[in-house]
Image (cartoon, rainbow, N blue to C red; front, side):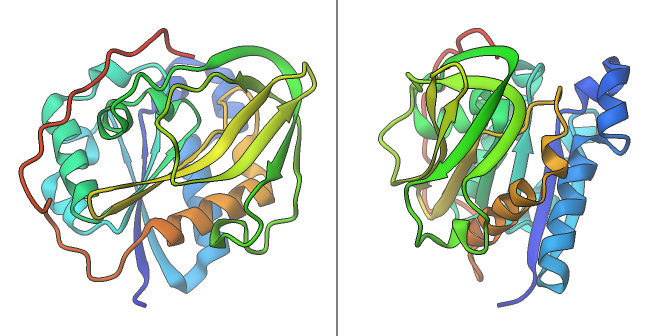
Length: 247
């Protein structure tokens, strides 16, 4: 397979509005994710970044046509993503582009539109301890990952997670407060593969964790498909559910 062409997208809001985030991620969350991908995949991937403040949010037709896997991180600015860009991303996923959705990206407009549910969940943020357990140990996404992944401090996500039944549940997280959460799940939409992975709040240095980086790298490779068409197989109008309060 040719080198996987990965675009890491970040709304880039926290980096511009919260100096503490820059102490953890001086090159932005997108920069940390991109470095982790490059470090784990090496010559097997080419990695670029894009941010919401760029023209067309950095996701032009040309960029998406040259992207095998789009990695999406968003939190505070979901509703500010332009309709045209949302539709463009959805079309490319239906046409075979892979999509890796991270953490609060569960509320992103492309993810909600593709899944057809609110994608709401339970949450609190008091620096709980998280164990990320695998429930699908032979899946390529867990290849070479030292499990369980232990995160000493993280935001808590909990069930109920309002998503359709996943194709596969890869990870299940448990938290020191007793909560559990389906923290790694996969879907197929059209010709595209989707991997949602929850660890990665901006308040914690999660994306420097080598096992988290490895999971994202594996996921980015798994959702990618060589020789994909660069268009959806048909015009598809998917209803976009209303979002609940952002976490």
